[in-house]
Amino acid sequence: MTSGPAVTFSTDVTLYTEVVNPMTRGSAAVLREGAEQSDEHIVRQVLDGNTALFELLMRRYNERLYRAARAITRDDREAEDVIQQAYVNAFSNLRQFKGHAQFATWLTRIAVHEALARVRRRRRYTTMDPENSFAIPFPVPRSSMPDPERQAFARELGALLESAIDRLPDGAREVFVLRQLEDMDTAEVAAVLNVSDAVVKTRFSRARAALRRDLYQHAEIASSNAFKFLRPRCDRLVAAVLHKNL
Image (cartoon, rainbow, N blue to C red; front, side, top):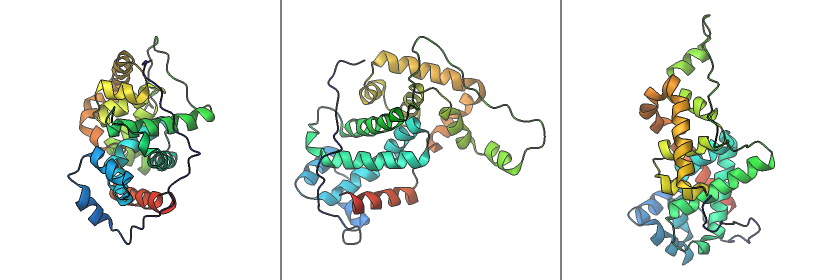
């Protein structure tokens, strides 16, 4: 484990009462206003009262947070709930961001913290044993004529990759998603998950080895299309957060 201080995010903080109405402050205007600005500069403006710019931060990191949360929860709907709560927590605790790490890292740690808290409360998460290797229980295709859904599944390489990643052990799964799909470096993943660089390297190596037998030759091609957070979902989540929580 890393020796740095743990980050705690309270869910009991009084939220900002101002409601940002997307109809009066359109997304296009917000995106134009902040497109070239750094995360840190946007954070300062949000803290100064321009809360509409928080939408830009959400749109920048929706996919990263979704992938991180989805890797832990293995459930699309719950992953969306996680990132909504993560944004509420981040907004409420924005003054705690001191710039010691990148804003993206700080924000991802909030989402990971929220996702882990949920699955651990339900006892659905068991961190992999670092001393033991693991194998994916990959389904063997039936020799009989496949049904249409199975044929469609076979054609969708991205869906096949997602399914294989879901079967990776807890601990290895989120490391693979953040390193391979999000292209985060070892140090940033270690900071997000609060583990050492060595643990990240070991888990990533073992996850790749487990995937390689059946589909790793395709993974680099398909990985950018796995767990995509497409525009309709992005718009829906942003609207929900802005309307209900900010």
